[in-house]
Image 1 (cartoon, rainbow, N blue to C red):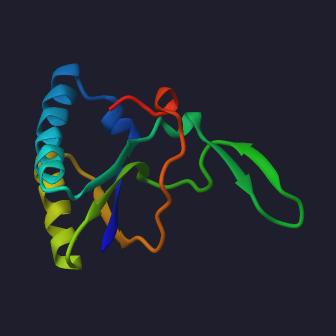
Image 2: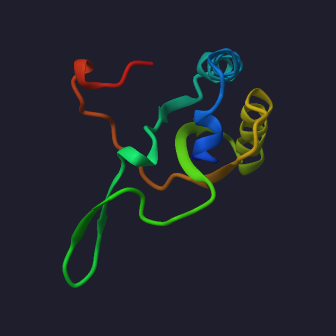
Image 3: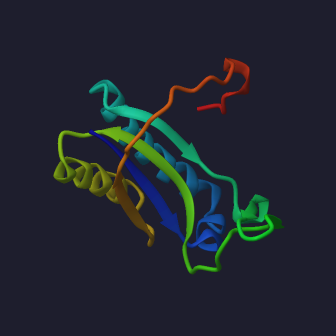
Length: 129
């Protein structure tokens, strides 16, 4: 079963990390990525730009396009993983590995994926890894 592991944290806190702290955290996270990739279990991974770059389409009687995220929250969605896991417990174990690699505050929301579509982006349009 595929699971989405959604990464939430306080955007300002992550943005204030020193380059050294950021690089160390990313090295630890890449260790988790490499382990999952070697097992053939790692799907798409994305790190989102800050909410200041977000645009929201609010649905209603008339659709409205606004700058920024839909709701004011203490934590923001910063990125996600798609991981193939045999069970929810296995997905929780992956989230725990990610949490150990990135010991800052925040949370990981784990949801089963109902549907997955293959990317049709040309290679030059896909984000760099």
